[in-house]
Image (cartoon, rainbow, N blue to C red):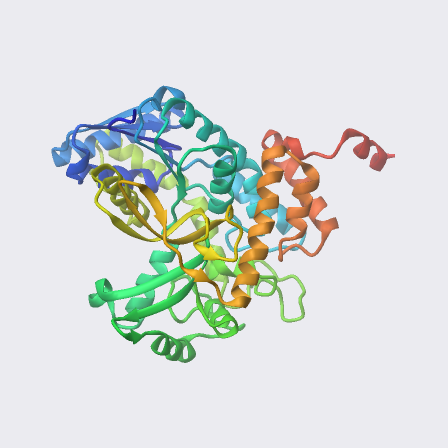
Length: 462
């Protein structure tokens, strides 16, 4: 029997957790509820709980925040469990960029696909599955909502190994739609816009875009042709119709992708290379991608500063206000409200097993599609088939990610090498093996299952 509690595992998330607590405090649906904040770092959990209490006090909200270091202590009776874990934290993420970089592979994000995404999945899938098993044991019937990247691989691992109802959430597609609406002058009419996206997390395609009976794609195409650059486009950090990679994908495949160039570029083998296919320097990326990579590095490096802000809020030396603008927290609150009240709520993009939502893709593949949330849980909406070329890209990636998940679940080195070798950013199996060996040394125990057999190491030394 589920109760009136929400469990957040990985509560040390410096952006998401404060946003979630702020939105929960502002919702009357959760009066009398308890938020359990779980983090292996006890200080992080305690700081977040103190920030949450200050928010609740400032708003006069009846909401309790309790810190934990043991998730099994927090889970019994939970209605919703959210996961924002990061195995290896910011240092691990940086290694996922640096290790492939030693082999001439530059990534703009490295947390979902590319060799960095594979390495991250090898660490995260087993941990997320272990969490889900605890949820099944202690909070049967709870809804699990995962935010940890790589989102697709993590949700697939959980759904492959457990029966826990699980979805993955990412604000990227919604953010892209907001930017496109603004570029088309539709911000004030956003509620009238109908948009259908479908694909995979961080490569989701705008299949239909209209207001009433008006097809908005001709207007979008005109703006893309007018404003977007090409390979020599200037560095860009903000989204919109000016983005060079998204424009090139639209011209090539006939549909506009989300969520921005720094993510979608990593799914293809050509945007992060020079015109002749040679490696590029990490400080001189083509297609305007330098700003996206710089944003990633900046985000990794700023975590210490964010923690100082949170300490100040917890101690009362700074106002207990929401940190940043976190659309993801808002979405979670809306979803939980729908689950609790039974009132249907439409979500633009949710990650969950396909089960026929996208015609032609494996039923078990985790896809990003619209969904309805309500008394029956989270139900994906059927979008039909993807255009053939897009279907080819998405299907190939789904199978490669399935290899990644199986490698992570089994601790299978051969499958891990195959998953790396099949990534478009990796030139071949020899490089894949070298990346994996370097990653094992860099990440230590977190990837020790993928080390070369001792006899192979001795043979090479001889």
